[in-house]
Length: 336
Image (cartoon, rainbow, N blue to C red; front, side):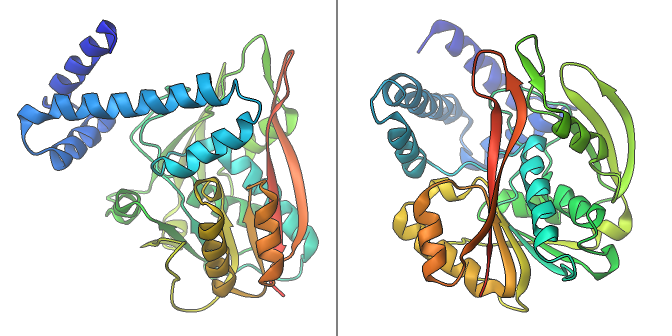
């Protein structure tokens, strides 16, 4: 373990035990105290977690990427490591695009019940290292905003269920609020001389939040930034439920739309069969399943169980000089 990392680790342990006004530091302090009640064991525990994370990065960046079948090896690493519940504002763009496609598929059908599988929580930014505010879950609000802005839903006729396997995500979304949620939205991608946001992504970010709240403090620099105060009437349309999509289904009325982005890569083939089957069981006839998993087996499974893919799109978020653009794909399946 490098000396510099050991120094930072010791400073981290000391900071976690101190009183602080920093929301993220308080959150991680509570997390560590719950996970390791004995203060004497915390540094050793954090060290073991550091080693585990560094081992994964080594296998991914220095072993898998240099192999002939690198993409396959990286995918296998993600299926055997722990689940990640991180999230970012940028992830909402591909969902917005997919919902626009959904409207073109059947503009007359309103979307009343929506299930978001794995909305995630912005606990610790992995690459951008942006800590603009306290931990937040962005996807539920971005989905509601997109549905209303595109004319697919009305706020007074909408129920959105955010379901996650991580109890910390559920606790966050269920936490009582003394005021309207204030979201500090910052793009995880930073524009530079070699990276430029696409015009469509800029337009998306500029409009984000206007259908569900009051937007302010917009300014453009290397990152796109704004704040969003969500309206009370919108807050009432969202609820959170614990769910393991591989082994569980939610009871109650069927959903018009199920969204599951950035969670299917963690599943092997058997888990995918179970997860997609559970999604199909919770969808109403004609309902849409929206995801961004590119493995062909997902589409094969979905077709067999009556969820054939109807539309797909690829979206560019940013252009990179001398390299492939940063982008994502979205797939829409409709239940027969």
